[in-house]
Length: 105
Image 1 (cartoon, rainbow, N blue to C red):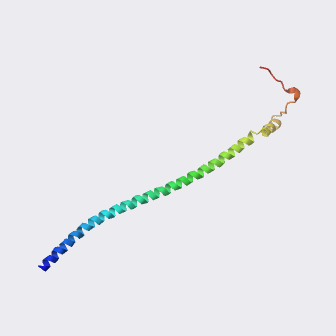
Image 2 (image 1 turned 120 degrees about the vertical axis):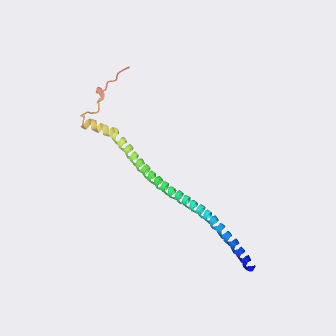
């Protein structure tokens, strides 16, 4: 009888052991899925961080280039430069007092 009681107890333990791996397997799969999802999110965050950094560098270079172009435009359009080009290349002079003709509407 004792032997039979031990056998039942062993069977009861065996049945519980058979149930536990199924539960642990489900818990392990859930944990692994969460781990993969977390890793994917971290990788994507890192990738977006690099993209933002590159876009910021491009923006800074573009802003510096725009400022250089504004300075160049101002330099090319300055009255002194236009007067110099008119004198040297075109042979023009500033009009004297009697050379200016005003026309009425």
